[in-house]
Image 1 (cartoon, rainbow, N blue to C red):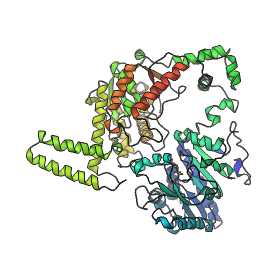
Image 2 (image 1 turned 180 degrees about the vertical axis):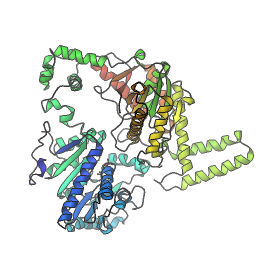
Image 3 (image 1 turned 90 degrees about the horizontal axis):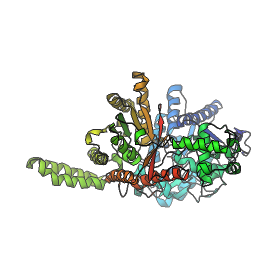
Image 4 (image 1 turned 45 degrees about the vertical axis):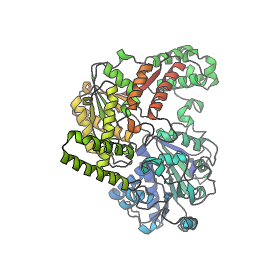
Length: 638
Ligand code: F6R
């Protein structure tokens, strides 16, 4: 890699098409591979230094991105005896105020995810302390800087990147020379942390972070970025001019920095998104379709109205040479898109279908139109709700149901039992009102929250003319931590999905194909289904028994037009019915616990905008005008 040659300033990536990138970037097919490579780099540095009797000073991040790296380092320690006794660590940041043993503290995170499992001497571990009096912060920060310098500086600093473009907690506006200090967290950072704190109103407003100057002093830097949600900010940090609006862009000034991205996070780089602009490309069918759609939208013309000159003015001459002429090419792409529009008669009919819904509302939010059509076509549809969704229910909803139970109890049970019901409910209310902010709910409260979500799910599918008997609540164990961070998928989770498949032997399954968040519930559900399908196919090698897999996307995004295999056209009445079903999820209505950053729209509004957006894009490309449309990707293998 060019950056490491003698510590010279980086003069450009040598990978074809990467000339706009001002920092070396490595792209990995899988986030798992990326973590392994970062862990290997750390391990080799530790071993090199040990050979010369030296210490190695590491700068370490928290967050969802580095968990895989820590896991791999622990494996190297346990399985290959990697010795950490010469390692000194400095963490980047900590919320303020924050007690070290709090659920959300970075002290706790680091111990649980790494330090407790390897042999770094306790005295070598440094994490900013979020539990000091405010008046001591300045002095404390100076001493943190001093300790880093005294240790010889950071040999290798591993970073994540926030969607605000922060590195450490250096939010927009942080200058290139900043040092360890107290900082006010950006709104987007607070929204992203909201899930760990059970709502953004509980996220601390401040944090202690090492500065941009401290970061740039490190000898070697690796920045890791995984997931589609990071793609726009990583592209800006790497391809645009350095600015304090995106502090990660200051890494362009460093001599030895490498960005490790997974495919999803690399999606906005010019060489990936519009490779024809920066290099000679080999025109595959998929890339041709993508380029023609891109061109049509860029010049605001329907595909069949594109002219030779449009291609020439937009670096696409070579594409026109792949076909007899431009007209031929445009007709070919147009036809390919037209065939993807599926009306009722082209959809499954009288078949066995399982819809796997990660949370209790993903089915109607993301595929309500399809569900409606599947029922219309007399398919035998089972909705398998994979998790109970309890962490996203507000306490106020539980209190409402407690009141309901107090009032309604007497209708069904005798006086003595009413008394004991009231005692139990009062105890529950008390437990809720005395629970410290940000702590996990009592088990009964989690259970009531799950029931609230289950009953909403049934009300939702009733709009689609499906009764309760079509709903199955898998209640997968990996989800049941009471917290947003989940346990890894284990064999029990996989077995639950496998049993469901064996019971129904479906011809079609619908799966949420959201791979953008490496630790999100949708992605974990996807992996549980993937593993279950592998087992299923081993048990039933006859291919005719293998279901067709339809991938839909979660509440946040839709498939890109060129990626989708199927578009389901929807009328106004279809969309209204879908929205009515989403309305049944009252606990998520008006204000959701996890709305996602910078999007104040409710889930039904997002579904409406997204489906109408797809329809209007198709129409803009010259296809028929629909009121709305859903998009799907179909695969045989996950
Ligand atoms: C955490 C830190 C932050 C995170 C960033 C990405 O110690 O300094 O800069 O690295 O917010 O967080 P995740 O990995 O959770 O997306």
